[in-house]
Image 1 (cartoon, rainbow, N blue to C red):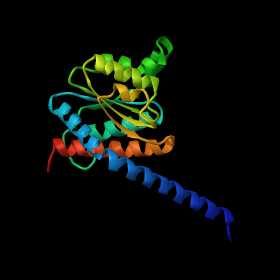
Image 2: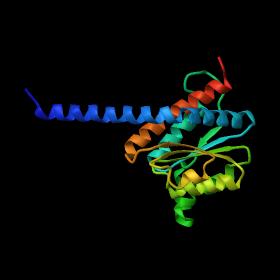
Image 3: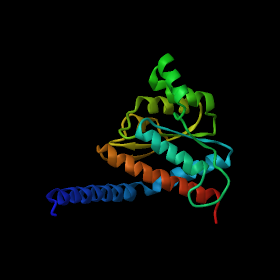
Length: 198
């Protein structure tokens, strides 16, 4: 039986994939050198006994968890753990902070407690304007941490507070998240190879 709607849905799939391929191609052509430098910065942090603290809200928080997992567990090598932590995964802590402090302080408070000079903080925000991610990065700078960010659109306010930033120049939030996730996996794999060469 013919389903006229199937062709339309299939076309939408091809359109979405085409958009992803276009945005990824444009992004990585422009950002590869910066991505490699960010990997070197993270590897240097770990070599000097520092920790990598990653954070973001919503889907950006999931990307942060993917990056921390790729670093602390592994991607392609059986190797020692890399000290990395995704902030914001503790529901009890977050609800307490949200009730007793402003919700935008949730990462700043954790960085103030855990972040030390020599650590690296990586903020993730699809529009570059997450208040919580911005406050976290500001606190990281105040605590002497190296700072970096994965951002979208034009980089927003956060770009001004990150020592290094990778900006996906798109207002399509889903596409930004997808490229950020790809960046997270590549970044973790580069750090892995820098720290544990074959």
